[in-house]
Image 1: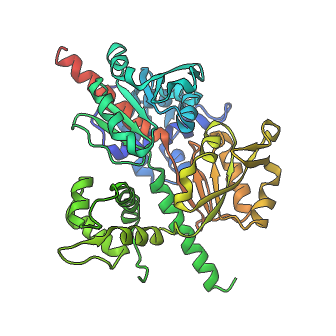
Image 2 (image 1 turned 120 degrees about the vertical axis):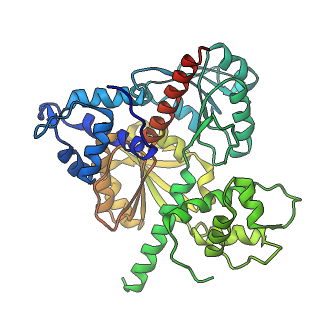
Image 3 (image 1 turned 30 degrees about the vertical axis):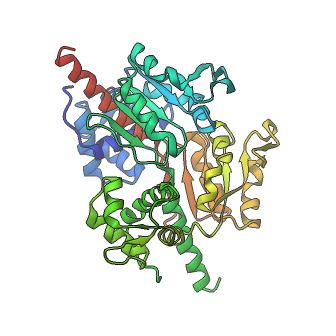
Length: 216
Length: 216
């Protein structure tokens, strides 16, 4: 279907639908309704109905969507059927974990190579080459890489971002706990574990306080 | 200071302030103003001023906050001065990366041990024991663990969550790409990489389309 403009909040809900649709056991009904999806995910029915209508025109009244077609429509919308080549910078523990993560293939993400300040540590990790960071910019240009994944410590993240942008990338997936200054046309998506830990920590403190007060 | 009720959105901004305050080089001024912080992080001045006033009463007109005191106030507010013991389930690549991540100490997070369905793989990882998942519930009860970190594949995440809750934990940090059904008093914080990838992927598609249309 013709692609509609879609808000970031709708966009962020699509992977949840996709994960659920893929988790439905083989042998279940081939059809799924917006109502069933809403109930399974604990979401509002109207919202789910609207979201799905944005990405698929396969919904039929009282029957719902053919599950496999809906999966295809969402994946196509998200561009998972096209391969995105990426480079990863910082081949430490987190970087290596991401380099070895097989699940990225489902999202069309292909990590071409990694770069590190300390390239003698390993020639290849998970079957992928680790080069010196000096080679990053030229590599990005040569292979027309559009995405960079930053897994270096916070204090080096900005310089890495600058190198990536000089190399022509258009999107950064940032795992460093740092704000990055980038031009307007570059998208930075930060995986902010510190934010999650703040929420978890404050919740636990409140729980502990409550238990003390209730005299447990 | 007396702890105020604070919204999730304020809470989520605090780690950003903290990271910046800690990144200011030694030898800079001992004071920092809300204005300077707002400028450095590209945020609104009024918002930063309000946020800081929620967690610290050390701000002085025209001078700002003593940086070290503000760091202490935010850390105390977030409970990083108390140690939170956690267990991690799923000692694969991502699990091992998290077990070895030294930065968690700064957040008061202490991973006591890991659990896996396949414990013969390693006796210890990063100096921490890896036990069979059968021992998880009893371990959590014995050590009064309040937080579980789930790094198993999506299809096993719900059963692991159920085990953790049976063991008495109150908060789950979920790295599995799955919605978890939990009782109301349990907080689930999901690290949703699939959501980030959706945003990145759609941005890149739009960029590619734009470049094609502009005839590059």
